[in-house]
Amino acid sequence: MYLLSDMELLDCHVQVLYKHNEFNQITHINELPYDNAPMIYIGTTKNGKIVRYSNELDENLVNDLDKAIQSSSNIELAEIINMLNIHKQLSSVWIGPAYVFPKLREQKSSTNVIQITHSNKELLKANFPYTYEEFEYKQPCYAIIQDDMAVSICCSARQTSMAAEASLYTLEEFRGKGYGLDVSNAWATDIQSQGRIALYSTSWDNFSSQSVAKKLKLIQYGTDINFS
Figure (cartoon, one colour):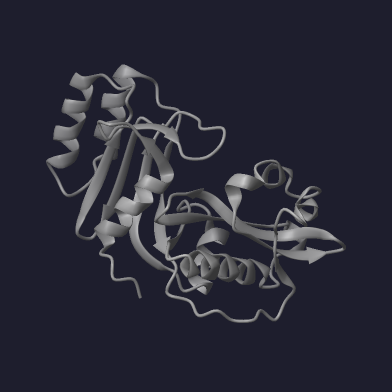
């Protein structure tokens, strides 16, 4: 079990998710192609919340938003949406749980999980071309191989020196075989062996991803809300 509190884990998480400027505003998503950060990020735990505003928001609007957000322990989504829409039309509101992997012991997998390195990254090319192209930024990466092609992978979506966020995907025809669990555990074990924190997050409407989190026995420490 991690010794960090939920709020400390959330702070690591937001640093992994977004690039910040010197004013602690979020500027870009911490993943190629470094798209603009959402207008607001709110992370909540049972002990408090962390709020980050885009550097593109008007200062007066930020002050008004902060008063509304900090005035209650509950997040009034409708009020925030209405305030933002006056400034700029929202395109989406994203909400989902944030998890941390429990401490794992290195173990041998019963399936053919392998680490993807520069020497064998061609195994990604057919089914995971984006990961192949951005491989330098996605390490470590683990995969299940069938017919000389990766069919299930877990790699780093976003990361810092302290923590990394898992990116997990299994081709539809290979789901239900436990491949996602095996590659995720291999990835998380590697991250933890580096002394870093292995994180995982998803949206509330992604039921398959939440099912994986449950099977992995991940620990939910918070909830993410993004206004874009």
